[in-house]
Length: 287
Ligand code: ADP
Ligand code: MG
Image (cartoon, rainbow, N blue to C red; front, side, top):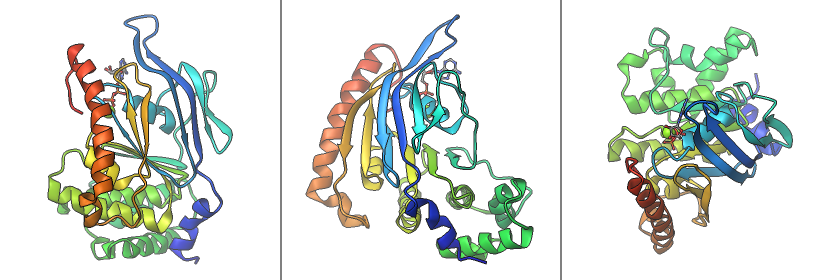
């Protein structure tokens, strides 16, 4: 049995997980109400980058994520994953274990234990025998904050933060090229969020997966990411790409550093400009 860290590091080391979003256009219901969600949206995400996407509610963030995940098709442009077409107008992508999504509302099976949830994908895809999958699951749980101690608990017995951690591991065990997270900590209080950030960054520092993280919390975006992308109001396109040149590992001092505040100031102006436009258009402001 190879070491879990070794298995999971393969993608990062092989330089996989490079995403290229090129002039993506998305219209919902083109022959009916015709909602233009994305317009000429282009974005390069190098392998192993942590990218956080912020923007006013309804600007097309989830639409973009759903296209990457393979839940939805695009109506113009294309997306390449490691130089191969992932989504084009003629080719709707399929969801796959190389691009796993973690949502705001958990999706663990309540009748399965933590370990059974974590290894579920491996068994369904018949990637390895059950005993090997269980070993790998236990190793991964142990290596990420000692979660092996809850391996036999059921989701209902866990806090929502703990459930979210298990979900992230369930995604990670598939050794995805990209982790897609759609406002995973949205409903959490500040203290739980801070704990979740610690755990997510631990995982990121260990496994260096490409991460596509949607949030409307600017502090969260800057604290976690290498790059913060601000989207315009709908139809969404990229308004600002901010390089977060803060050293890793990120700590509590990061948040109080002068540079953090400078970056936040830049992001805040961009987001507010767009939120104002959205608001004036009668859309609800959440950014
Ligand atoms: P965000 O995640 O940034 O809040 P979404 O990507 O969910 O925004 O939505 C972008 C826009 O597309 C919104 O105006 C939303 O109402 C619209 N939209 C989303 N899904 C659909 C759909 N299935 N059919 C029609 N319109 C949709
Ligand atoms: Mg959304």
